[in-house]
Length: 225
Figure (cartoon, rainbow, N blue to C red):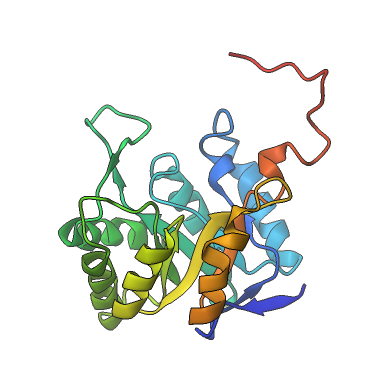
């Protein structure tokens, strides 16, 4: 497996990573935990060192899955997770409210650390930009977590160019995560040039178009409601 350094951060990851969202959330019912642990172990055996999850996936259960699966390999892998969502009510199963207030970040990081079974999160992304919280405050909160030894690197998912520059001025951004594939090329004219300019790594998600570019879906495929 080839590796990459994310920008100028020094964080080394496998060229191909494993996004674990669909194991617990979004793409139909959650898969069998035992089967998913076997899949994650197989990925490690093939040289994958970059694993991605988020607090909202499940919610919470995807972090628990990854924490259990990667516990035997903790010193061999890089785990990325994300903050910035919360439920609109205690009963809500698909969290719908953004919340990147510094006090919220300081609270939820503790849960992620526990579920992932780690002392420090390798790469901590803001999952989506919160329009109600200045990005400088978000970057400052993560900077404090880095100083405290609870987070190693700061990331942003789907930021605008101006937001990325403002965040990077407070706390260097290690990586930007963005959808990018053969049928979605927009980052090439927006965020990718800025990542190159600032020395920020770029982590594309859904490189196979969420399954549409794999040949598994065609004009005969039947989709339920």
